[in-house]
Amino acid sequence: MPIIIDEVVISVEVGNREAGGGSAGSAAVPATEDRQALVEECVARVLEILREREEP
Image 1 (cartoon, rainbow, N blue to C red):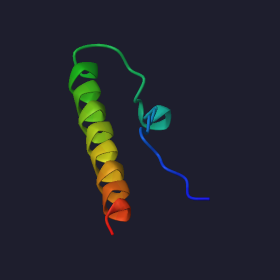
Image 2 (tube, rainbow, N blue to C red):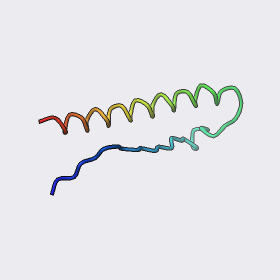
Image 3 (cartoon, rainbow, N blue to C red):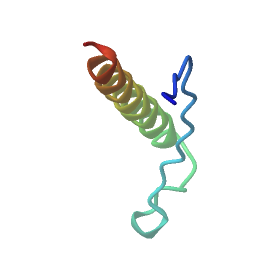
Image 4 (cartoon, one colour):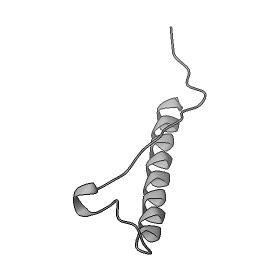
């Protein structure tokens, strides 16, 4: 029986506590934007791979 995936929800938490990734201040804003961009790129790649597998 084939399995059909209609929607994929991916949650990712990115952190680097050893390198001070949890620090507060103005430096945290660009880090948050970088993390968001990284997550968006990962999700886009995963969805692209799933679409490629779906094509006959």
